[in-house]
Amino acid sequence: MDQSLLSTVEHAFDFAQQQVRALTERDPNFYPLYTDQGRWRHEKPAWTHWCDGFLPGMMWIFHEETGDPQWRVSAEKYSGALEIRKDDREVHDLGFIFYHGTYKRWYEATLRAGSPDHSLKDVVIHAGRTLALRFHERAGCMRSFHGADSNFIDIMMNVGIIFYAALETGDSSLLQLAHRHCATTRRTLVRGDGSTSHEGIFDLETGEFLRQTTQQGFRGDSCWSRGLAWSLYGFGTCYGLTREPKYLETAELNAEYWLDHAPEDGVVPWDFDAPEDGPLSRAQVDTSASAIAAVGLLNLAELTASEERRKACRDCALKTIGSLAANYLGDSVDGWEGILRGGVYHIHKDLGVNESVMWGEFFFVEALQRALRILRNTV
Ligand code: GLY
Image (cartoon, rainbow, N blue to C red; front, side, top):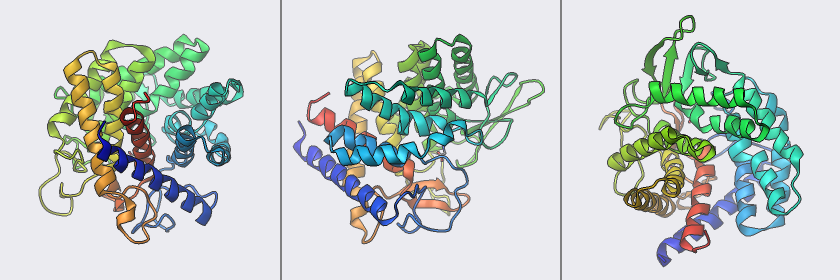
């Protein structure tokens, strides 16, 4: 066991709990999105309203790891307030909110306690059905929040909730719809070298795929780091749910690109093709992308057949988690309210650049949880 990595990770996990506790005491019932100069409360816009599940999601993880009943009380309160979002037709992010963050974790907590509350699972299924309403028959995919003709690679992190709903209810047309979304995304947004495009645009009359483009990446033909991380984690999750071999192949291809292009410490530039200099310089990292990819790589290490790939994924993930915990914690800056510094939300709109971002906090905490279990040999 790597004792020094374990203490670094333990310190980060304790610090994460302190920061979340401080946030909820300072600003009860507030679901922030990103910091501005290290502060969660500010007047800058949300762009889209997709992150509310991540704060309760961290509380569920803290409860899972520590058993502290107070975390469960908070997690239930912050999750329950979001139930209304199960009918939200404005966002493509219901998987983030209900599958990764809130009700699926809540349901699993009741399962572990031996008294499954199926009404919690019903909320997840309901949200999955709502998300599926975004499907466009001719394009063969769900539309992003950005437009009827637009698909985002980010949706790969959300389509899992549709598979879950379909599998739990035996709904074969829902299952088919989710498979079609994945097939279209794989065909149009994942490139031969394993890199990804952020966004695809379709002709809705004919269903023809028109072009790759981006909202948050450097260019339409670049590889936005977080998009690649969403794809790697998302296709891996879909393989775990369905055992469709193509999804495993895709996650493996994404991982190959990641492993070939990530720097030694695992903390990636905000876009793999960003220029050396200027306002969009690759010197700006995106720690949230690294945290997401770390969990995606740990998942893949459990799914992939090749021993060599398993080791490469696990080594890169643990190295990355160690670097984030050692060099990017908020405790190195006085008064910083987030857990993880160095995230990027939307560089072109100057929203949350080099800040803490709520999904970065959540996936970092998930990565810490996974690392703790590996390093303590409790998996
Ligand atoms: N899903 C939105 C983002 O990654 O910023």
